[in-house]
Image (cartoon, rainbow, N blue to C red; front, top):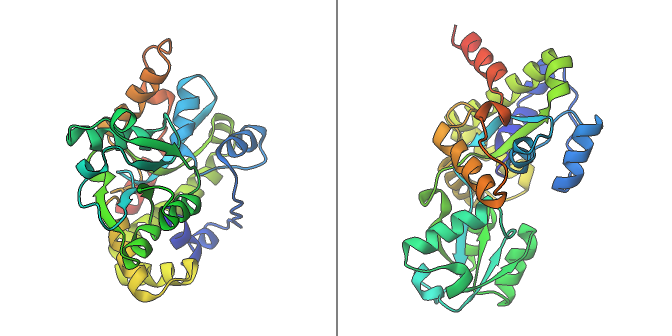
Length: 283
């Protein structure tokens, strides 16, 4: 659901306006990267890890972010009322070493805890699996995304933290290859224009966006409305990302790979076409 701008663009016909027949296959990150570099797909929605690959020299750039902050929520069993109470408990994580794990660590640090030392983190990659683990009692808390955070609250589970309150970095983004940017500039610009319109529509017309959530994710109005409120906490203003948010990513990449050296932001992102679109649409 974090990719609401994309699905809004589909439902509102913004891609059709650009004469683009869009397909949205679901691929694991590494498969998505391979497909992008081989030309099997033109763009993918795994910009977080694309930033890491680009920093290491892979010819790809992130070109659009739907969220300015991580749209993740720390959900816990009903008896836990604070992060401090999770000392010694099992925590379902996304992946060890990724930006969400780092954001979770920062949130725990604010409470004087280290999740690696003071809790028992368990890697559970897929959202549905993490939710099932919490529901079954296999973990005491986990990271959830909308609408799972809403559905868990309906079952009595407690939302302890919106990770975007602990740290700022862009997420739910799209990347493409440098070859695509060079050789298919017009297609890329039209794709970005559809995404940009989807973002602005979703942010500025909440009632219509909530109806799209109901149809696309097949949830009732109450869930859609609360899920939208969760998403709205992190909407990007214009599809770009702040320098401080991008530097959160680059600093994390440097910590994970000590020999990588300086990472110019121009090496990992390219917002030039998006900025062109914004200027044209303001006229």
